[in-house]
Amino acid sequence: MDLGWQAATQAEHDRIRAEVAAWPDDRSRWRRAGHAGLLGYSVPVAHGGSGRGFLDTARAMEAFGAGCADMGLVFAALAHLFACAMPIAEHGTPAVRDRVLPRLSSGEWVGANAITEADAGSDVGALRATARRAGDHYVLDGVKTFVSNAPLADVLVVYASTEPAFGHLGVTAFIVPRDAPGLSVEPFDKAVLATCPAGEVRLTACRVPADHVLGAPGRGAAVFQSAMRWERTCLFAAFLGRADRLLARCAAHAREHRRFGRPIGANQAVSHGLARLRVRLEAARLLLWRACARLDRAERAVFDVAAAKLAVSEVAVDVAAFALRLLGGAGVRAGSGVTQDLLDAMAATTFSGTTEMQLEQIAGETAW
Image (tube, rainbow, N blue to C red; front, side, top):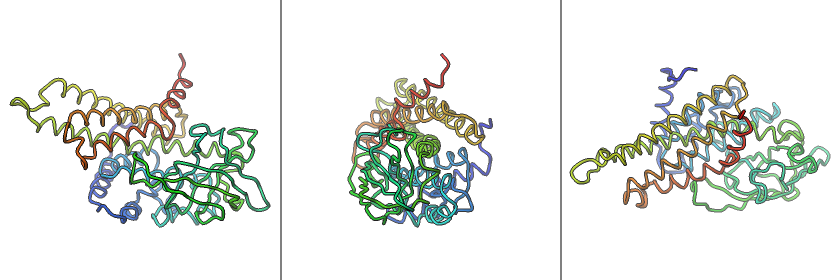
């Protein structure tokens, strides 16, 4: 495994980081993300994307997370790409891919993923939303919550049970246009990833054409798991980039901030804390790269993906908590970004599968 950066890859990383850092704080950022290629980075070239694999995409998204000041925007863009565009790219019909993916890749359209329910956050087999066949359509009923991008979405990937008695084997994934009859969205505010719009999606006798099924009826759990491969690696690469940026800020503060006539970094309590976090950050990065490399080779990578997601999310929390302590008053001032970084990192231990779910998968893949 090549642990270095090829010159072209490094140049791409630097380009993305510099470009996103210069974006103005306005509504143009979404289309700028599309123009930068970030909204379709892993979508096939034939459908308006860049066609990149897992490792190249992860490195690009690390630059996105490190360069962009707004993690809510980063999360919105990557939820759009990995939880909506990629399931369509990998499981949609040719006609649907041709119509939908170029618009998602360019940023003309916003995509969302609707799977979470109030009583079925991580349990795909417990979904209460249902879908029944009615001629050349399916009729969907149910309520989804914590749907990122829902208030602005033009198209949603929605999971519902077509055979409730079969549990996760009876779940089907659908592409649902925002203007589908019977679909409504109620926005709500949240403290974490606050600039990523979210809402509750209600499906009331919502009619969807039968050719909008992703994969095949009853294959929704497989569609969801394929999306999770992208989310748990490439989306979390952005959190890796954000933690790296924040740790660099801590190191600069330790060099420049003086107490009792010397930099605070001269104290072992500070320097050792920075050193430990640097090691953990590098270890998380290597776990992430290994998971992506194995996925690019189509190898089994259940352990690798779970370990990478676990390591990145936990070190992101610890870096942000350390920064809040180290920066003191500067860290808690409004506008410092550090308290928001901590809240956003805390959320990363929950979405895309909780820490406990990752530990279960790791335990299941480990020969004791």
